[in-house]
Length: 118
Image (cartoon, rainbow, N blue to C red):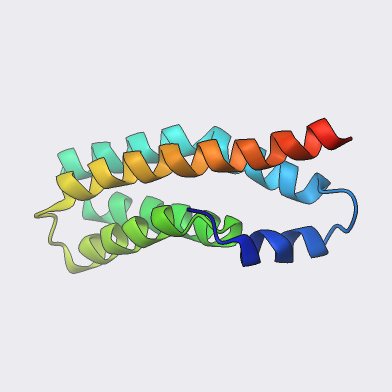
């Protein structure tokens, strides 16, 4: 699910154009598969430092775009990395993949409607 208040805030920064939103969504969705793969790899390698760093970065991008589900899972993964306790992270990565797919689809749909309206 998307936080539509966050989307409205981003649109207010670029009234009538949505170029900022479109650019942010494009960057986020382009990097998303690599970030999820990096998190999965870090969990498999028990690399809590990389896990924490990538989860933190992805959480920030997700929060900025209103992708609350992605941000929530990343927050849990980041905490696991900081605590150096990766038990349960495999399930969290599966959750992240699902949330990332939903968020990417919703964000792309949102920006494609903007492009269609132009």
